[in-house]
Image (cartoon, rainbow, N blue to C red; front, side, top):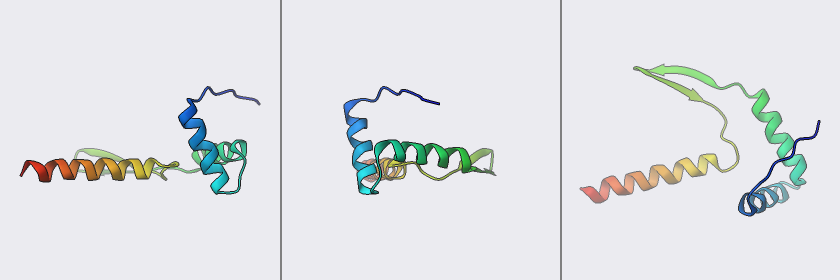
Length: 80
């Protein structure tokens, strides 16, 4: 099966860079990421009334959330 994706130049560059860093082609990197998504089962649990879904971060998603947390903390600290 062949699937065509239109990526922005920035996403394409990041994809190629991350694949190269792992010694993979972009195609192999995408295939491995998709296989990981399809085989990794998220953990579901409740915290109070909230439903929490815990799964393996993809690419820079973990870094992205870390940056958001840091910005939020900085903002909270600046307000005090």
